Image (cartoon, rainbow over all chains, first blue to last red; front, side, top):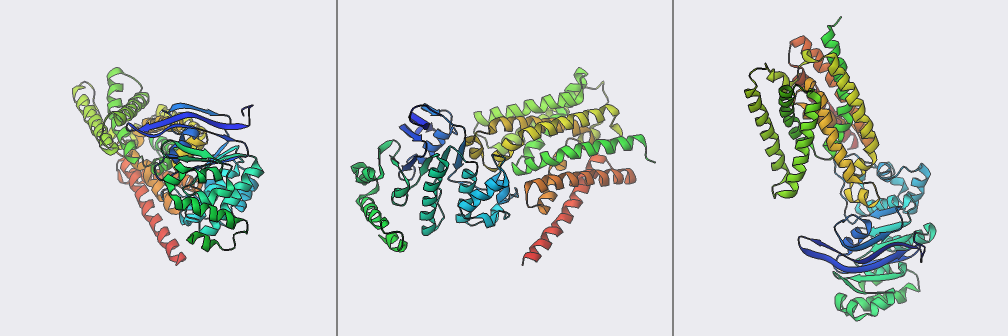
Length: 248
Length: 267
């Protein structure tokens, strides 16, 4: 861990190119302990690439990555389990770490899928699978969590609940979280710092600042920024009418 | 009772089955059966070199297969050919070069059939040592790299992100593949080694719902194949390798009925 400011990972002007095309360039950001940093941006804006650079999956990069922890939990955007490999949820939970059974149960209970423990991964629905992925990543109590679109395939109510959970996890485990989302207004409440990407850092700051930023508006349209304020207002009154918010 | 050579063959076969079980699972999971074939084909070249230089056969095969695996990795990076085309290229050219080289070695009498399909009569006490010591080493190393190898088989990026060094595990696994081919060529023959790796595993897949079970069933399948294959080889005077693989096939077919049953039970 870094002495200054509890920094867990720090990206300094990083870039990555594939087939002579820059996927991202000049990205700087840092994730601190018990803080949630959210990457947003349109498709192909380099959100996953940035996360993979931070994780050290991409190696021939420009710029520097400084990591101050090796205890990392990762939820990749896409993961397909081959049918040739019979794998139960509990086998999958032990994939990268040797965990005690109660640590495993605790994580599965938190994400609400403990009843699936003995089920085969291939028989899970998209939402259930996503919850298992999240449970696996948090089960080893990581210092840094990297979540690449962790709520895809989860229904809207579940989505908000999962973001609440992610927020709770960051408090409970005192870990830093790098969160990727294509959709700012649902992650709004669960984030401390937003980085808006479009091949480069287009703007960054607190969620409110980013929503008001002109470049953000240009990227996502005026509508998005309005939706955000509507949502923010609604949020003061609990999520009683989720469907309505969705329509807005 | 049985002749000495038959006991030796049994002991050798049991040793091999213990190793092909777990390795075979990874071959199936990582879709490497054609890769195994390529390494096995290149073993003929290794045998030729061993005879020419009067060198230990198993060591020579191990080195040749490892080099072929390295060449494959290089070619994959340098050319635009798909992986299966490169494997075919290396498999058949090394087999061809091996056979041509044998043609030149007129001063040595080769039992080509034995090399291709295995020969129980040929298993010596030295071979048993090679199989059991080599096999024990392979299993030991596999146990050591199990976690990263398995994690990266499920998802490479996850393993890499969480600090398991999957590339290193993959490289070591390739060496283990060359090693199992080197120690089992005399029993099963180079054309059928991949069969010994994947058919008991395929049977195990039909019977298992988790990876540990699949490994265990795969070993049991291999052991049964060796026993049934060798006894029928003795009984009907058939070549040992094909008899073992044919026995594995029969077990696989039986395992299909088990699937049918489970599906019916579910409905």
